[in-house]
Length: 225
Ligand code: NI
Ligand code: MN
Image (cartoon, rainbow, N blue to C red; front, side, top):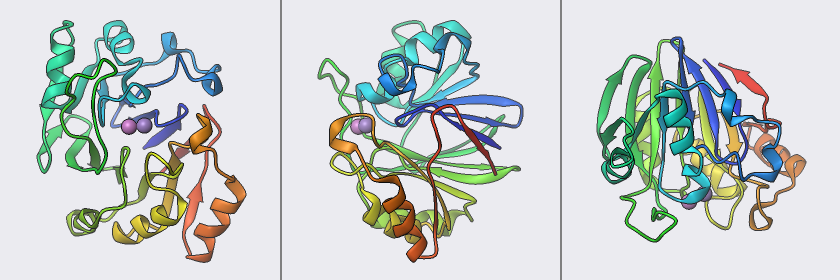
């Protein structure tokens, strides 16, 4: 499984010969100018919630690639009205896709569309595949529900927000890593705007003191698990 950081909370996950884009917010991200949304391949687009910094480029990419949007019922219905194919889910539900087994899990946050309309409840995803298991937390606070994930499966990687203010910051992300029993964390949702700027070295060092690895990727670079 190859995971490429597209900036902010946007990811490209390549697994089982499928391309999965998560929460595309690229065209308006000053820091992600080097990512060309016209050249992104996608079979699926996972959306954790309806905030603009997670859905901005979903319509464009879905229409260009024919990708299927996987999200909560309300978000999938919204895109359905625009003629985009979707797979609706809700919290606690699991579905076996051709790329792996996906569970929608709890996130503590909010989820309105940019125009204020209802975007369902915010979520995270647990993805179990033959190439490894990952947790994509979405925008969330630290929550005890994360302990359920370590009961569900053994994770190879947890992808956690670390920018603070709108989500968990570094200290709570370290506790979250404990709750989900992941030693390796990919940080996201940081630096994009003023409220969420962080000191990378300080964050990496803090994880290290708890015997955990925090990975911070340059935008456009990848890790393989
Ligand atoms: Ni949000
Ligand atoms: Mn966000």
